[in-house]
Structure formats: structure tokens, C-alpha cells
Image (cartoon, rainbow, N blue to C red; front, top):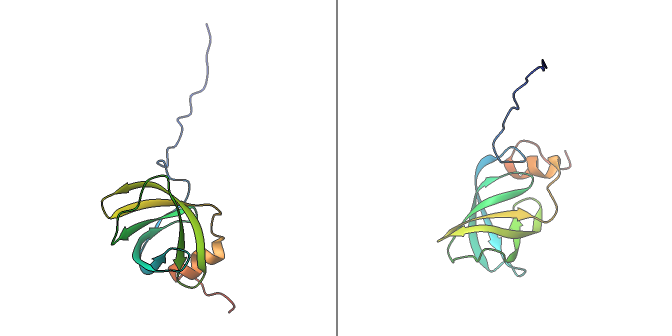
Length: 106
């Protein structure tokens, strides 16, 4: 007879990092020509409300307040809402600066 201890895995959902609900005006495109709104943000990506449809699998330049441009891949898109993943995750300091939790340089 065999005996083993059982310890259930704790599931934290499918997200890699904490998401912050935000309402930030941002821009899409290298020249920041297209307006959008960031409605939630994590260090790995963001959910956007857009005024023009984005295509799943495309790469975009996203200009965020306080930190400037980041490159992201559109992971999913549904009408005028899309989820994107940043090529380089935000540092905790930059995440705090964008969400208003901490300020850069002071």
C-alpha cells in the first residue's frame, strides 16, 4: 500500500500579474495618431477600448501617459476592445507611475 500527502495547487487564474483598473487616454501608432483608452493595465499588458478595430496578431506602438511608447502585440480583439501584451514588461516603478501609485523622480 502506498500513501502520499496531497496539497492542492492554488490557482490564481490565468493572469501572470495583477491588473489595475484604469481609465487612461493613450495613443496607438508610431506617430501617436490614433486615440484609445486603456481600461486595465498590468506589467505585462493592457486592455484597450479603441475607436478603430485592431487585428489579432498585429504589433502596435502604444503611447502611455508618464512613460511614452511601448511596443505590444494584439493578443485578442473584439470589435473595439482589444488585449495586448507588451514586448518588454513594465518595471514596477513605471507601472506605479502610470497607475498613479508612485511618482517617477520624486
